[in-house]
Length: 313
Image (cartoon, rainbow, N blue to C red; front, side, top):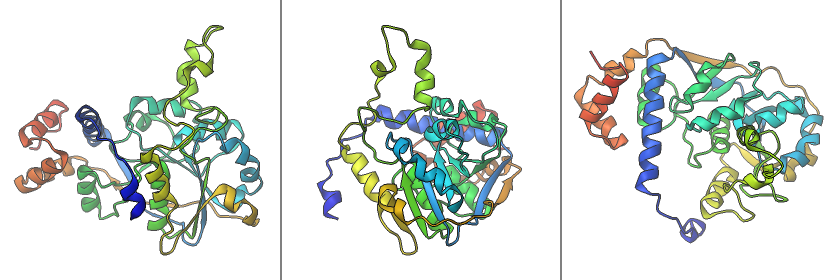
């Protein structure tokens, strides 16, 4: 499209690619070693309305309407927005978490264990230790594709590579009718990059004193104007699909109708024997194919398996 042609992409450094590739692979291997995990293959979203909540500061102004019509939709929360929602007495139906970095765990500082979490094998491995119900989905990551084939479950694509995009992928896959984005802007608002109560605040609180306020630790992730990368992500999540209409909360809030949704149900397959996935890699063709996608030499991949105690028999 003309929009995509107009975007000026900056090349991602090899160091950044290497860092995230190593993190995803490390987390995925830790997952395979430790987890007996539940992978979703069905959610009862058909013909339903979903409100996804991001952590933009605009969320604070949208909160009253969300509370008023809370029973009229399923509420999906980004992990970043969880602290704010719970401080306001709201429990989402599902928390979405995709970031693999260690700092992601700070967003769960107020987690009470009563809300399901959806992540992926390469996501933050610390959340596996939380006491609540944790479910997984299969992304297009090569090791996820092996799990999806083994369990015969769908792969959820996420072109925008963020939790808002994951919410859309879930809605498309499981046939929701409307997806409404609250607290999603990819830009700062009134001098703030995020709403209150995020893990970013939790991380910075120990360093605050009368000389260093929270405002002195302003984040650089979102600015007043969207970056080209964020413009593309914004366009992707708001694009209507064949059976799914997407809206910004500000454009839809006058259209809510009072109704009552039943509890959301999860249909899952359990990956009990994670060693089965490793044994699949005994096949040289499969191993070489996976390593090609991971951009790693087969012998180095085997070294990583051996180091973590997952060497194929």
